[in-house]
Amino acid sequence: MTGTTETIETSPAIVAMLNQKGGVGKTTLTIHVAGALADRDLDVLVVDLAPEGALTSILGYDDEYSDLDRTVSLHELLLDPSRAGDADDIILEGEEFDLLPSNERMVDRTGGELNGEPRARERLKMVLDELGVGYDVVLVDNMPSINVLTDNALVASDGVLIPAYAEALSVQGLDRLQKQIDSVREYFGAVRILGIVANRVEHNKQADAMLEQLHSEFEEGLGIPVIDVYKRVDLQRAIAAQERSIFAAEELDSDMAGVIAEIATLVDDELVGQADE
Ligand SMILES: Nc1ncnc2c1ncn2[C@@H]1O[C@H](COP(=O)(O)OP(=O)(O)OP(=O)(O)O)[C@@H](O)[C@H]1O
Ligand SMILES: [Mg+2]
Image (cartoon, rainbow, N blue to C red; front, side):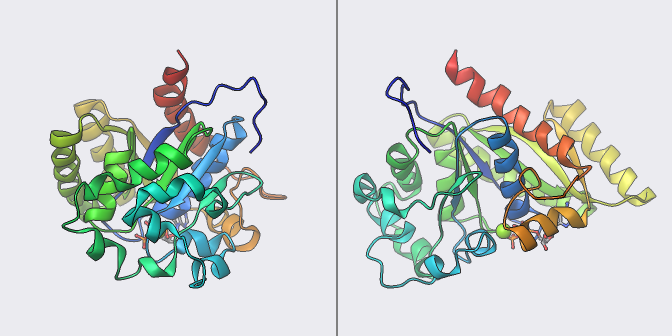
C-alpha cells in the first residue's frame, strides 16, 4: 500500500466477521469480501483475530504464524497496544490486501491474559488506531466463540457481517450473537449489523424454506439485509489452490462473484462512502 503525499490519512471503516458458531464461512467470506473490496480500489487490511490462525495459514503464512522467535505478534499488541506504534512490520503485504496475522502464541493465552485487565475489550481498537491508519477498510476474522477476543472485534468495529447457515440451529444461534452485540452496545455505543450472509446455501426445498424464513425475519422484519451465497467449490478452490479471492484468482469465473461484490458494496455504501462525506 503506497500513499501519495496528497493523501489525507483517514481512519478506516472496521468490519467484524462474526458468529460464535464454527464453520459457517467467516474465514472464507473474509477473504472473498476483502478481495471484492480491493476490486473496488479500496485499500484493505485483514486482521486474523482467531488464535487458530486458519486465515493466516490458508493465505500461505504458516511460518509467520508459528514464528515464536519474533518479539512482537498480535498477542503482544493486544496485551500492550502502546507497542503498535513501532510494529508496522508485523503487517504482511499482499497483492489484493494486507494481513495482520494471527500467531500461535494466541492459542490458550491471549484471551486468558486479557481477562481482568483494564479496558480488556478495547485493545484491538487501540491497536487499529495505529495500524489501521491509511486503510479504507479493515476486516476482522474471528474465532467461533463469545469471549473477550470477539468482544474486542465488536468494540473496534463500525459494522458486523454475520455469516450463518440457512438451517434451523444456526438461525437460533443468532439470538445469542444479538445479545453479545447488545451488551457491547451498552458500553461502547453503536455497532451496526450490516448484513447476514446466508452461506453455503444448497439447491433444495429445505434450504429454500430456511432462506425464506431468514429473509422475512431479518430483512423484512428488522431491515437487516440478507445475502445468499450458495455452496460453491470454487470459493474453496481459489483460496486453497491459489491463496487468493475469486476476484484475483486465475481462470476462475465464479457465479458467486456478483453476490460477494454485493456484500462489498454494502460495506462501501454504509461505512466507507459515508466517512468520505
Ligand atoms: N459458500 C461456500 N461454498 C462452499 N464451501 C464453503 C463455502 N463457505 C465456506 N465453505 C467451506 O466451509 C468450511 C468452513 O468454512 P470457514 O473455515 O470459512 O468457516 P469459519 O466460520 O471460518 O470456521 P471457524 O468457525 O472454524 O473459524 C471450509 O472448508 C470452507 O472452504
Ligand atoms: Mg474461521
